[in-house]
Structures are given as structure tokens and as C-alpha cells.
Length: 126
Image (tube, rainbow, N blue to C red; front, top):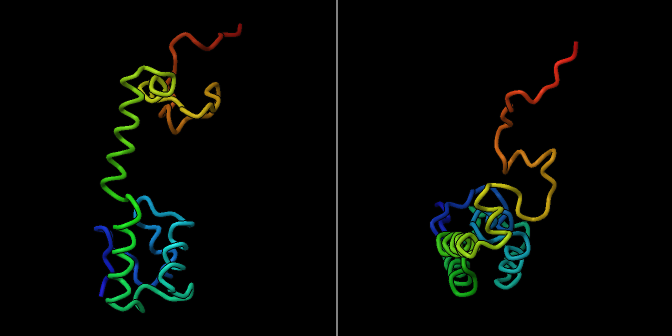
């Protein structure tokens, strides 16, 4: 049986605490908090969960946390709001540059993309 929570298939062989992190919006602290709340031992694997425990996990997540599609939509709307306002962070998002104050002279290749050569930039030595 595959444990399916919030539209995500949890990996069977992993411990529950780590498998819950596959759900967007649930990280280390939230997953351990969920396990502690429901009294699921840390050593328990996903395939060892009963249907009742999976149902309880699903209910706790639905009741207390915003995850997956809803959370992605909220994050996207927040970024779009910043871009529409034209504030500094919004401009950085719009230009595809780092938002949190990192340097761009060197590095920042993840946000800026592949380096492109600028014609006539190199000095020619004689």
C-alpha cells in the first residue's frame, strides 16, 4: 500500500519523519512536530503505518498547515504583488537577479543564468 497524502506518494522505505518532507510546505520541524503530536515513533517506516495512522496524519496536515497547491499559489501571488508594486525586491524578481542582498559581480549564476560574452569586452594585448 502506498501512503498518499496531499496528492504526494510518500516513499515506502523511508522513516515517516523524512517521508513527510516530500510534501511541499512541510520541513524538518513540521514533520517532527506532526509525528510527536500523533505519537508516531521516530523509527517507524512509512510501509509500517496503518490506514488509521495515515488518515490521522492527513487530517492533522489538512487542519493545521497550508501545503502543496495552496501554498504555491500564495507564494506566487506574494512575488507577483512585489513585482506589481515596483519595490526593490519586486524589481529584483522581475530582472531575475538575487533578491536577498547577495553579490552579483561574481557568482549569482543560478539566478542570472548562463554567462554570456559581451562583444569587445576583452582587452587586446600587443
